[in-house]
Image 1: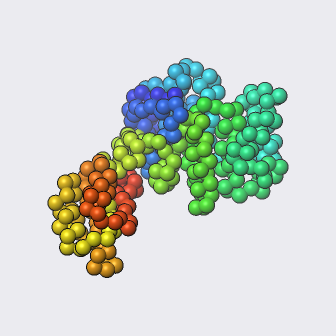
Image 2: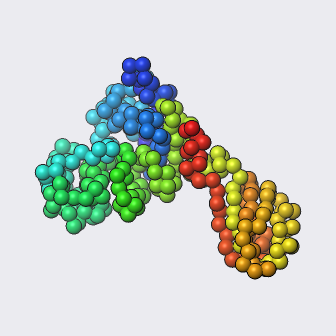
Length: 308
């Protein structure tokens, strides 16, 4: 749906985006991560037609964004970091205004309004003035305006900025729901949000792409060996000796102890299928697994490593 090729944007002597290329596939939720000033917003503004690239090409739905600006904008719903709301309007008045400037046929407005209000959870506030709304509801209205014309692509710039933890979860779930039907590109600096929401992640730093892949792939690639916590019911001396001979286990040590035969261990492995192999080995030994979880390098560690 979106294809970026050798994209460059300069402001005077400053190169905000430095020769980046990537794709966003149809039906994909792509997270665009990076520290402040990395080039995320600049890239999004070029995709949406607010900035013209200094060099390179952007196509949306097969159309060049520069040569077919209006046609590509019709395919996109855009939520900028600062939500474009008119505080003196009621929610439904604002969405009607958005529908009109997006050329939504008048006879389709009410059915679409009902659909968008339900999808964005605005039933309780649709008749209220926008200046009466909480930050969370204002973000919901911003998302509603972005999808009002039923675009195929959503571009969301920091959609959870300034929200409390409960509001972040609400907006995250809403993005996941919308992502089942639309192609979504959204930027964030909340890494847990990206990990929970995205099919794929791109990390950008100083205008360049420094990491790309599924969250698990990035953590595996840049986070070193995976760490597992395993609590089993087995003789302590036998278990620790067995772990040290198990293929794929790089290190094993006792973590905690409930009794002589109920002990927690920390296991390190760089093998992709280590989790399954450990579980099968415990089954083969006849040792009941009481607790088993992976404590792999976090996305925050990967982010710090790639952007330091």
